[in-house]
Image 1: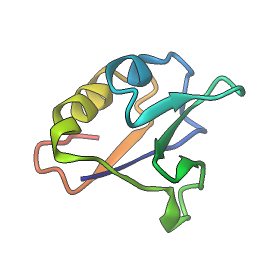
Image 2 (image 1 turned 90 degrees about the horizontal axis):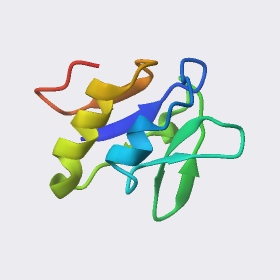
Image 3 (image 1 turned 135 degrees about the horizontal axis):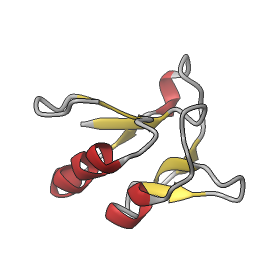
Image 4 (image 1 turned 180 degrees about the vertical axis):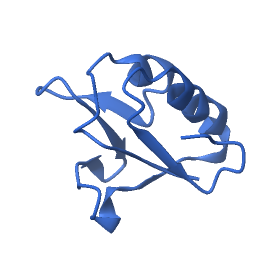
Length: 84
């Protein structure tokens, strides 16, 4: 599964970071971003580099973050049960 955040829709609520800090992180601009061992991904909707792979053991937490996001700004690829 891979995830990305559309910062244009992000409300900065921070629920995603609270639920799954291994994947989501609030930055100084007050918006959430996805991150991995290479750092923060801040590409826009047309940037294929915007995605972060989610480790299998974090899949449930990532899906919970999607469900709880008030801005509905987290998008997932490769998760059959995801409704983003």
